[in-house]
Length: 331
Image (cartoon, rainbow, N blue to C red; front, side, top):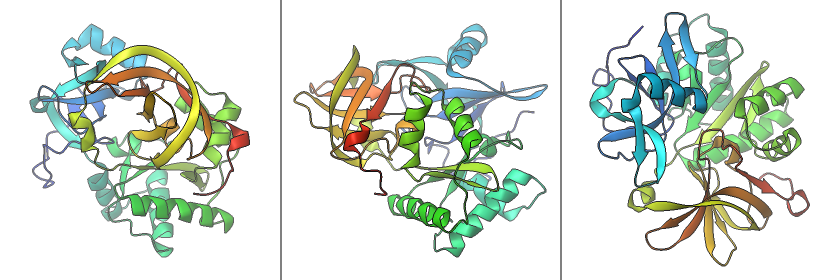
């Protein structure tokens, strides 16, 4: 099924494409937007799904690249600003703009018998009963495009730092009051396998358990993420210098849950590490010793940074905090 463009009917700004949004083309290709600034009038994105006669098929990064190379090469794009191969969709090729906040509004207004959608509504009610204003929250992932199944996760996106931090504190509180459930072993394993990251299972779980950005409601896992404007990126141009492995200390974690996550480093030459992969949001806190593996980049001004997340899975790239330097507590 191909959806028609209803941006105007929803009253949205068709120019305003944000990370966590999805865009759909006439071929039934569904891309996740990865940055809000355009390049050569293209929306920079990553192919995640395709509508087929049998339903909606989900792709890994490698599968998506193969599909585009073989059948839709015009969506392959080299970003000169970021010195990376991405997917790029011209604005006039978008037939549907899937927006998290508008999708959540629709789900709240139109009740159904869908078990995941009903759990989402109960989760929002629980948040609201405990003082969280959920009117500006969005829902992304499979629910955003109606591709969710009975075993799907709930992926919520916040657009204000204060609300996101309030939600993290509330998750911790509701877990203690047993109104939300901690992830059991099967949910942790499922989360780890979905991320397909370059951490061991033990490393992944240790880092995640202290973030308070995920829990379960009625045996369904949910995650919360933060999206705030990052216009600083528009002015930056980088060139890759090759892979690097670095051990250093986190100087500042004030943007650790942003998209992309950013941490300043206490290092004589490399100023920060940036991650576009959700696995490494909130991964480390100020004062912690970390090991980082990723792509070293240099800006036009000569500043060095490490990028973790050359692809969605961040293959062979990671940020690891050292447990002995890391007090596990809510921040």
